[in-house]
Image (tube, rainbow, N blue to C red; front, side):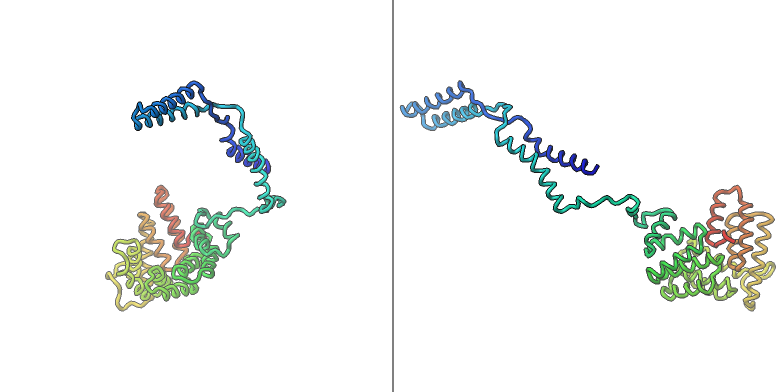
Length: 361
C-alpha cells in the first residue's frame, strides 16, 4: 500500500514539472505581403535620402517606424502541433529522470527493507500532563512516567476529591521526593495525611506543617493548620495565639479571615448563662468544657428548629475542632436530611465533607 502511495506522489511531482511543456509549441510565421511592403518603404526612404529630397532626421524617424512594423509583420506567432526535438528531449528527461533520482536517493539514505512495526508494539501517544483532565488519564500517564513530579502534584487533589485519601498520601509524598521540599508541597502532604486520618492532624502531619513554617514563616495556610492541630489536641491557648497573630495579615472581608474569626469565636465561647467573653482564670480543661457546651447547645437548637447551611457548617466544623469526627458525621447526615430540598446546600455540604474527610468510615 505504501509503495502505491509513493508512486502516486512521484507521478504528481512529474506531472507538475511536465505541465508547462504539454501545450503546443509556439513558432513564428511571416506575412509575405506586409514584409514586402515595409521593405519597399525602407528602400524608398533610403533612396529619398540619397537624392536629398527629405530631411535626414525625418527620414530616419520614418525609417525606424517602418523597421518596427517590418519586425512585427515578420514575427507573428502561430500554434504548431509539432514539438521541436529539444522539447521532446526535455519531456523524456523529466519523465524518466525524476523518478530515477528519487528512487536512488531513497535507496541511499532510506531503509526500504525495514519491516513495519506491529500495531500492538507501537507505543501509545503520551500527551503532557497539563493537557490531561480526568483522573483515569493522569493515572495512565503516571503508570508510564512515575517520576513526573508535576503530574503527581496534579493528581493529588483529584484523589482527595474522589475520597481516595491513601492514594493522595502516596502521590503527595512521591511529589516531595521527586521535586524536593517546598512549603506548598509539605502542606499538601500534611493535608493528605489529615484526610487519611479522619481529618485529624497526627504527629507526622504536624511535623510537615512545622517544616513548612520553618521554610516560610509567613505561609498562612501552614499556620492555620498548625492552629487547627493545636485545637484538636485541646491546646486552646496555643491555637488562639496562632490564629490571632494571623488576623492582621488576612484581607478584610476575605473568606479566610471569616473562617479564622469563626474558629476564635468557638474557642472563646462561654458556657450558656455565663458572662460573655473568655474566662481569665479558666484552665484549658474549663475552656474545652465551655466550647463543648456551646457546640452541644447549637446542635440541640438546629435539631429542634433547623437552620441555614452556614449554621450547619459551623456545627460540623466545631465537632472537627473538638476532634469528634463521629459527631461531625452525624451532624452532616442531619444537615443533609434537613436541607434535602436545597440543591445548592447539598453541594456545599458535599464540599465540606470532602474538605474535612467525613465521607469515609
